[in-house]
Image (cartoon, rainbow, N blue to C red; front, side, top):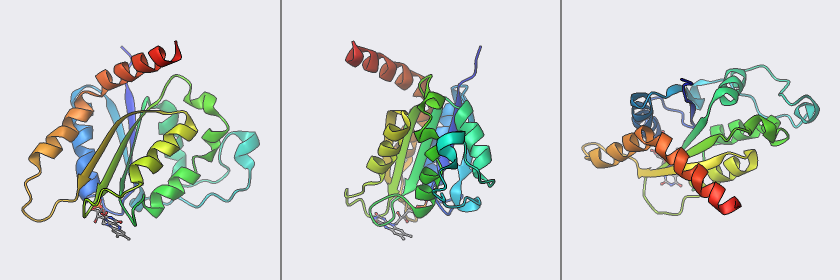
Length: 194
Ligand SMILES: Cc1cc2nc3c(=O)[nH]c(=O)nc-3n(C[C@H](O)[C@H](O)[C@H](O)COP(=O)(O)O)c2cc1C
């Protein structure tokens, strides 16, 4: 049986912050459901800015060599892409924007995405003002790359003795039930196309 693979991109500085906490719950659910997961925290990686050199336009890959190379390989091999961000000034973090820009090789090679990669979006914010664009920005990225969004999750950051067990359970369920979410989205997109 072919194993489903997921790559999880945490656009935070912190490996033990709120964003990582939520993503790790989703990962726990995915792994319980038999999905193989690779996880990256962008704040711990060396990822250069896109140089707009246009090399990827013809060569279909980036000419730079840094920590993006391992992520490109995982994106190529994964069925599920999970992108998570803390909200910074109402939107995604700078780290995540740099990562998105470095995905430019895929903009000209949507064939790489053929076979139907699915996307999960996660955003964390401190004040729950409901004015964050972070989910929209992540879903715009999915649209540009031809990735089908299947789930989204938002949560207010956890302070001291907050009890957020219910929300974290919901995150676990998203991971555990991801295969059903993929099937449901594929069915819906076929119905829309027909
Ligand atoms: C530069 C900066 C800007 C922020 N802007 C917002 C914001 O606009 N809205 C919000 O709700 N929280 C904002 N926050 C708070 C973070 O979203 C919050 O602390 C989040 O939990 C950080 O995620 P992490 O724990 O994974 O690092 C901001 C934090 C920083 C450092």
